Length: 306
Image (cartoon, rainbow, N blue to C red; front, top):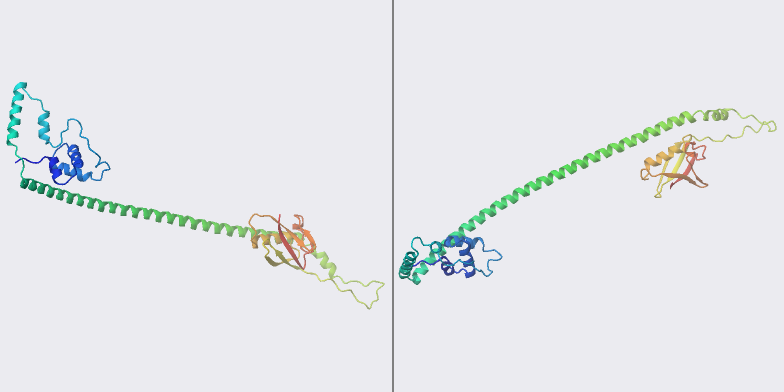
């Protein structure tokens, strides 16, 4: 009984001739198992169904031993080798008998069973590889999540530190402004404190009656002295703020109060003016007391951009 060649076996199992020829050629015609392994490994190749042209000298369908024996040169006498080869070939031709249909079916059945085993092994291997890839994806996902969480925690920590610094700087800035106001008030009190004493003393002296005035009329009423000024300030956005200042405080105290209690952008310079009668206050006016500027007992000031 003659065995089917690898190519014939693949064709009997239903493989396309083009694929079968490629498998036999790429495995060096080493056997059916190697050809089947090659087909299953390369079944998704883009060029698997392209027409296959075997290289020169490659005879498909022959076994590896047959090709090797034909390639080896005859040793000894060339004529003797030729005669022996011809006799062996004739003897092989006489012993070679075609396979019966039953024998073909049995061989194809064995090959199909072998193919099913190979396919099962391949599916099991692919399943194990898929499980390993899924584990790898999960590990990478967990590592990525940990990295993202760490980055987020670091960003939150930086933001919290920045906010604490900003609050501390704002607190220190407010304290500096308060200290400056306190120093300005002390300086103004020392500078202008003695100027009010003479006027107070003069006002405390009784007014002597005029010689021409009759003694029965008595002294004229004295003018009321105010020691505070209520100032209303109209800001840039139309809103107003109102507070009271000492009459002897300079106009600079009003400007500092506006800077601390208004929504004026930090660093933006502005000027103050009285709407009626209209008067724009200069830098020299900032050192003058409110009383001297005529802003006692009350006044309205308007903030304008400089």
